[in-house]
Length: 258
Image 1 (cartoon, rainbow, N blue to C red):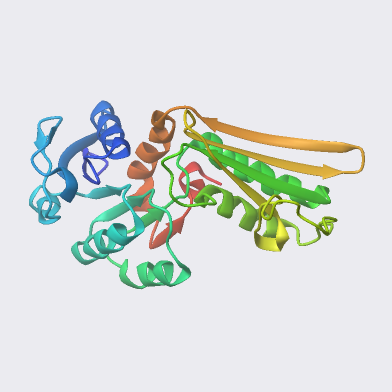
Image 2 (image 1 turned 180 degrees about the vertical axis):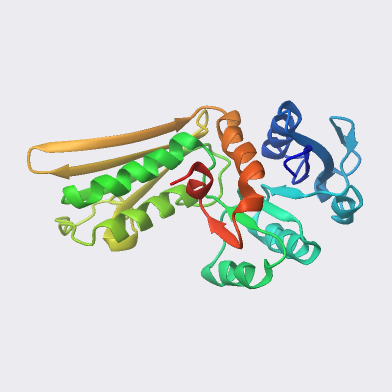
């Protein structure tokens, strides 16, 4: 793969994110877009490639890396196909269960799979910084803000952030709230009872704040993605690194070297 372009196929190629992924693949000199699959957009042409419904087009085109930004129900099937056909998978779909991940680990033996809640490198760093800061603070809350077409809450990034913070520190001050005038005003309890708040607002793309506090001081770590192109450097990097990351990798960090 190092001596020639990496042959890439895209699941969900007809959607807004899928189309952005196709653009990014086409723009990179080390990658080649050779297949596009999306049952909802059959017949549409993107960068000279006709979108089809059958993933066999990936095999026919000699795809080495398949990128999946779909929904969990579709992605489960797509990843099974990738594992069966020895195709590496780079996955931005969220909503997988622990059982799903265990299943992926059991089937990816002849190819590799990288699943990331967020491919924006700034978001990966935000999660890392929050994890590093957690042992030094007594309270913490997460506010994630997304566009009003996002159906799930909280976001996969918020859940991943809370999980990492909870592992870094299990000692958080208890919530002093005894009565919510409006039920749910304090958000949802995440790992280690870290409060997570979800905002869905027209005009936004993907944003998150982690607020940490102790006596006399607070630290706010904020990340903003104003456009879907913010995720593309991470996606492209994952395509180039996936062959060297055996089995199932969770998160973009190993591709970044930490």
